Structure formats: C-alpha cells, structure tokens
Image 1 (cartoon, rainbow over the protein chains, first blue to last red):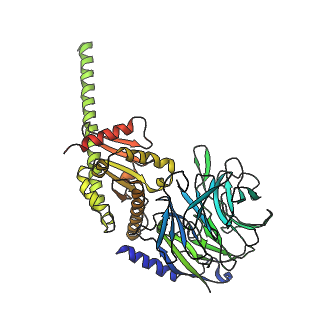
Image 2: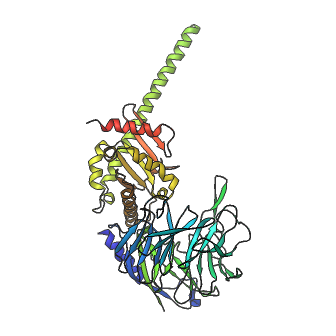
Image 3: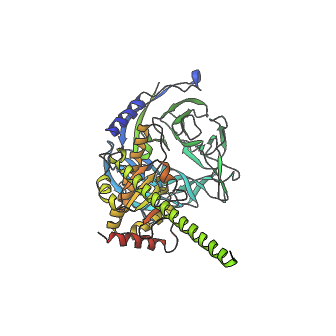
Length: 319
Length: 196
C-alpha cells in the first residue's frame, strides 16, 4: 500500500509545484509548473532498476539505459516495455556501466563509462557499430544520424568537446579550458543550440557558459554565488566531493535549464532557468532528485524519481 | 623461593592469563556470532523487508535457520565494475543450494529522514537488488539495513562474514579476496551444506 501512496504523493507534489523561490522574488519573469504525464517504473514491477540515460525518438518511443541489469530498454509512448537488449560484458551491444544516451531521428547513441567510444543502435535496438573516440566520454549529444558531440576528458589533457562523424573522425573541437584545473574539475554537461554553439554547465565549478561554433566563449555566469565545491584527497588525487551542477538542457522556448547539484538550495532538484544571454529568469524545484534533464521533440521533460527506479515525464506549463 | 620456582610461577601465571584471554576471545566470538544471528533474524522480521512485494521473503525465512554467512554490501558498489567482479566470482564458485541455505546478503544504506522516507529507501534498495540478483543469477536473498552494526564492518568494500563453528571463530573477508580465501569460504560453506 505504501508504494502507490508515495506515487500519489509525488504526483500531487509535482502538480502543486510552481512557487518562485525566495531568492528571486519580483525578479522572476515567469513561473513554471510541472504536470506529470507519464511515469515508468515502480517499486513493485521490473521495468527499471537504476536508469542512467534516457532519450526519445520522433514517434514518442522512449529509450532507457539501465545500469543494474546492463540493458537498453524501449518503451512505447504509453510507457509499456516493448523491447530490451544488452547484458554485462564488453562485446558488441554489451555494457559494463551503461551511462549516457541520446537519439537522432533514426539511431540511438549510448556510452559505457569506461569505454572510449559511442555505441550506435537502431530504433529496434539492434547494435550497429561503435564510433571510436580518442578518450573517455563525460557527456554526449546526438547532432544527427551521422554526427555526435562528446565531452572528453583525461588526466593528461584538459577537457574538450569533439564533434565526431560516424567513423570517429573529429570534425570540430572546442577546448573550453586552457589548462587542467585539477582532476575532474573540467567535467561538464553540455547542450548544443540550433546554430551549432554549446551551452556548458561545469559539474564541480559554479560556471555556466555559452560557446560559439568556432570555439569562442560568449559569456560565463555564476548561479551559486561563486560557491566552491569541497575537495577530498583520495590516494594521491585531490577530487571534488560536491557537485555544483548536474545537467543542462534547452526547453522548447529556447530557455536554458540547469539542474543544480549538491550545492544548490534543493540538491539535485533546483532547476535554474536562463535566457540565451545567461540571465536568470526563474527557478523551480523538481519533486524528486534527478541526475539529468532531458527534453524530447515535443518539449516534454524527463527526470528521475525514486533514486533511479522511476522515470517521470512532465509537461512544462509557463505562467 | 628459588629462581626455578619463580620461573615456574611466572609461566603458570602466564598460562592462566593466556587461558583466560582465549576464553574471553571465544566468548567474544560467541557473542558476536550470536549478535549477528539476532540482528539477521530481527532484520527478517521487520515489516520493511517482509513487504508483500519482496519476493525474497519466503526464501529468506526458509534459509535463515542454517545461515552462517553474511555478505555485507553497499548498493553503490554495484556501479563500480572492478568492485563487483570479486562478488560475482564468489557467487559463481558457490553452488545454488549453498547460497540459498547458508548466505544472507545485507544491503547497508544511509538512513533517510523519517520512518516513511526510510521505508521507501529500503524498498528502493531491495528493488535494485532484485534487478541485480536476477541479472547475475545470484541465489542468496538479502535484506536492507541502516543500523550501525553491519555498517561497522563495511569499510573498504564488500565484506563476507563467516561463522566457523568448528573453530569457534567469526571470519571476516574483505573483497577482493586474497589468494586461497575463495577456496576457504567455498570449503567451509560447502562442507556445512552437506550436513543435515
């Protein structure tokens, strides 16, 4: 009985969202309300166990990577499981730590955490090929059926965004940091805009940036008052212990949405809404913690709930 | 008292102290093993682990009277491929019957605020375990726990606690196992499983 009660509670909470946070007051340009339209995965089913990546195709089918059973799953627009593929391993179509996912009109692009490459599947979940990549991938976005953008990072070199074609050839590159600021400090999430530029959210720095297609920084903003993430020493490495931001996405109106991390007012729930110049317009709070924000072509928002066993789809209402 | 008597008395006193120390050690081991059994039974009797959706429950109850091995796990370690491999190797080495009858997994997790929130967290942890267990064909059941008892053992990775009745000791192994430890665990558990 507790499961359904919680789900009902979360749904009611989601519907009642919308109050602007105290920090914004009268400066808030508009308010955002979330309306739940779909929920996949509950405490008593076997749909999802720990989803990591989500993507949707033009027909409304939803694809999810699940790290607990090493699978790629396809759900119909109503949330019913249609197909499942993948298993633990390092062969074609297999995963050790499935992580990132995105979709072009005809293909799915997936990553395995410790593999330098992008796995390509068709919409029927058939494994097509692996696009080689020069380093491990921290973030991924599909730019088309034959093109992906990846954020790569290594101990030796500062982070970069690479645009790769289907064979792994580097078509363009943005070096968004001049020098390595420390292990993982250059970790980012990014989202491309329609003009070929990129919005960046630094995971362990209070920095949101916009970069032009030719690799020039157009603006840089702080959203957390310049807070610094605490670091901890593990072996000989100094690693960041707290996240500033977790993900960045564009909604259907051209707003830039940034999911706050541990240092946000509501950790992993506060979403900052910026205009294309990086000005903060408003914020809203997700009903449950999430690690990502994903928008489909119909501008619905997908986020996590129940620590990864539930995927929520919301319609955003602007007031 | 001559020098020899002094030495004899000292040796005798030392032996007595040693016997006392060994008795205390045995008592300590007995107390720890008993505590483990009590905590395990308490975990199994809790409503959160006996929720109707928890498919582990019947197997758990069936096997607990013979359980003498506890596998302490942090669910986060399942996302670390190198951390996971030793656990899978252990499971592959243990026959299904041994796993079902002799082993209880304990999923140690951080408590959330409030009973209701904690119960939800417990069910989430068990749901993840359900997916993981099915994928890897792991046969032993598990319970979720936030208490300090098992957390105290869990420091550097997955821990196997094994009550060795013959030697009257509680053995603790941290994964990855050292050379010979896997064989030792399999031998102890398998030998016992062949009993009544």
